[in-house]
Length: 216
Image (cartoon, rainbow, N blue to C red; front, side, top):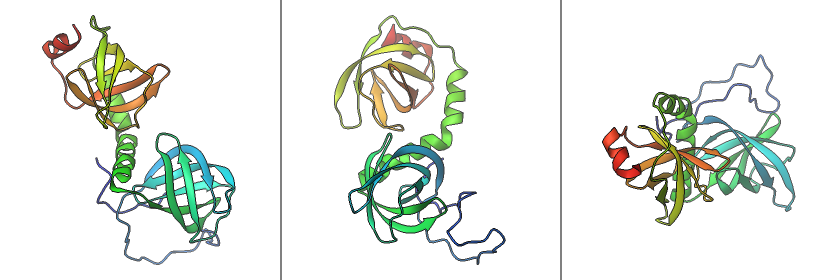
């Protein structure tokens, strides 16, 4: 399941200020370009007067997000968010919601793709984790490998364990969740972080001979 080219969904529990619980909203065409995904991303938000507040993103799409914060920026105000796994995002306050506000994200195509990758991982993370648990992991004989990041940078890493569907690597670099990386000869996506590095889900299920060729 991918994130782009779909309509937004309303997230349960988030109501506009002034809306009564019993109000029945009018049915209007949904003009949003992307599907909203329920997330729990922490960070901080900076308002136009340069004040910063902790925040938590409640739902998100490549085009916008709803977040909870003690800040009360007005609609149309420019804000800057610094979010875990995504870094700096700029946007404009679109409306207020209960306990926070919604932001229309202003971002490049590349940044929107990073957001879409992260949200795709959020949508499929239970499936991905389940797939990885189905296959036995083993400690590779050839643990030292090269890791190629999306920007083509090459880093040394140590493979902690590997299976037919993925690998866990020890490295200081932490590309965003959902990023496509190449480990040795195998392409995959970053699916989660751990204390020593991160886990990779291979793009295709590997056969034992391919793993033996790469990892010994």
